[in-house]
Length: 145
Image (cartoon, helix red, strand yellow):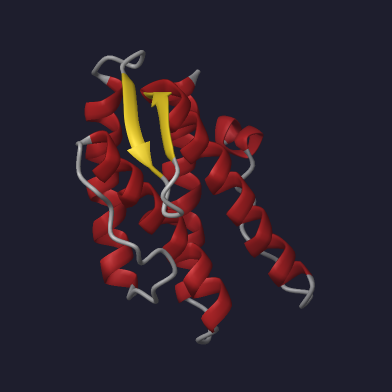
């Protein structure tokens, strides 16, 4: 199930990147969609034993996001092929030390993305703009799923 949730996250993130960047420039949605991938990058750094950079709300170009999404597709596959029970020690940006199994970190990334895509959806709904339907069940019904 975790693999399918990650596949849905990649699918949904790709749709939101396209949607946000096909619209006129708006700072908040672009920062939120970039944050999805910047947070993933931070966790991939932690999983690799590296300290992540502190910038999680940068504005990135669509090309940068598209490239990052493809890198993350590969990283997710690598991590899923490894030991999901392995415990990773890390520090939050606040400095607090924690330890979590890889499987919990991956599930965190999925739920984190759901949260921020919900913020994007709410932002556009407030403007009366129809936005991508990227709920899990939508993914399950998609022909490419």
